[in-house]
Length: 352
Ligand code: SF4
Image (cartoon, rainbow, N blue to C red; front, side, top):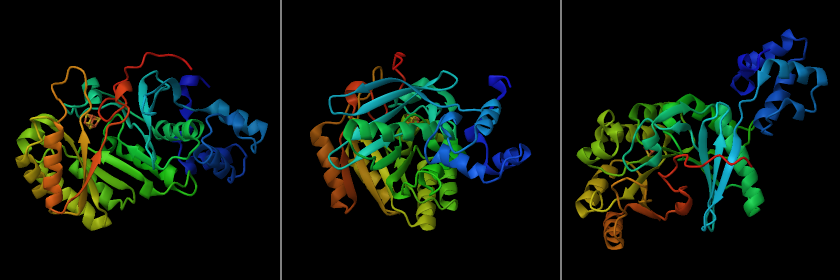
């Protein structure tokens, strides 16, 4: 069969694969074996599937392909953060980041090439939207970063965050299927409590997560609790304003009993005043949450600067005085454009 007409094996549901095998006079349990190779061992070639007969491997090869990611560039920053650029089957590029800190080793994954939401502080948003990643392409990132974690730090990953390129909730079914493969015992068996999905705040999809009773953590990139400022900073606010977002978060908490994380990047003279802190405290008082305050990472040609140390502290102390749990997040990977909001495929292809 022509290579271009073959289907990606990792898009085939198990039931359909079983039917294919039965039609080729193979026992149905072979589909379980093939799924173990795909989703437990992360295989990206039928040749590796050594408990299948040579004949079956040839049949699979003749009918299916792997649209897998190919790492084309790796950069390491002085703080040991590692950014990997992958080439997709259709030649587009996407990036993932491995972030070490004293107690954690975090994989930051992408879910789209580019992003349609165009948040004004974000380099990915400036690229526009190119495409959604498939389940296999999301899964490949984690397999690669698991190996990279062992090779570079002699340690297993402790956390997985969907905070790379793209808005995960706009690629809902592929992201949730990938998380299912990462967490299920038939997949990698990683606890959902180690996974955090971060969204710019698509209220309808947050409610969908609640109805789907997800067990991973949810983070909301809020960045201002003022509708006018948010309309400017994050155009998604025009269709999902703060009132809709707050209602969705309350619904999410009621259905899942989970405490969400609110992410807030402090931008000098934009959202870092005490009035901004008051608005944030008011927004958050309707549901249990913790707030991550983040330093802004410089992006070329964007008008924002990071907040002064003094304003940062005043902002933080005000929230703490309201008994809100606040964590300060320091930037990692800045020198290689791997920090939050900086991923924009600046890599020149350099086959490794
Ligand atoms: S911050 Fe996230 S949602 Fe906003 S443009 Fe960047 S990648 Fe998209």
